[in-house]
Length: 276
Image (cartoon, rainbow, N blue to C red):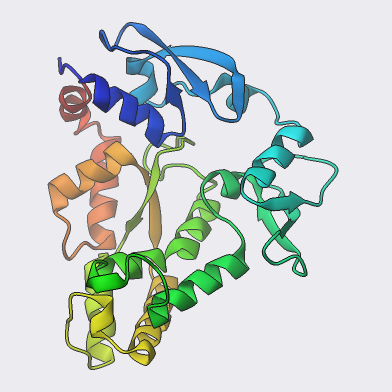
């Protein structure tokens, strides 16, 4: 059985948006206290065994509907004004106003807010800075590679994929906070297709391209993503897939084969060894 380090356990809670309250880690079977940022007054506990298997999380989030005041507070934390007076559920669109763009009324699900989505006008301004270099600190000196910047442009595609799958892992069917979007055709292959079609050679950094070239790359890459299948997977499932099939030249056929093998229980023993 694997012995986890305290920092690994703490990071696992952090990745799901929780604050681990313990100062030491004993074992996967010992309960540990944690706090959810949405319900900071409710100290909760779980074993790391149940936590990494996705069996437990915030009891308040999973079993109790958010109040309109809780939802309003989360919007305010991000600089938004919630315009609704009634809250139905996390998948119902809510009207809100960004304080940086007070003349615009936007709509977004509460689940999307909690998962990092925000004002589309702020996003477009940020995107514009990516194209031009702007004042984005990652731009200076060519620190950000082209691939890192391009991955940022897939945010909307990823969110639309989550909606399509009802925010569930396509393999385990669990609805958790650690979902990642798997490309049925590898991101690197899509990137290279775009560069080839535009007749651009590969250059490592964004500032090796002109502003016009960058905008062409972004636009065409977004179109490519609209044509392929995105697949939400739990983090450990996604890691297992790439461990088996590698990270280059992935195909939809590979995923279908992986899903079939998973359903047959072929990876059960391997998962037990890796999770423990």
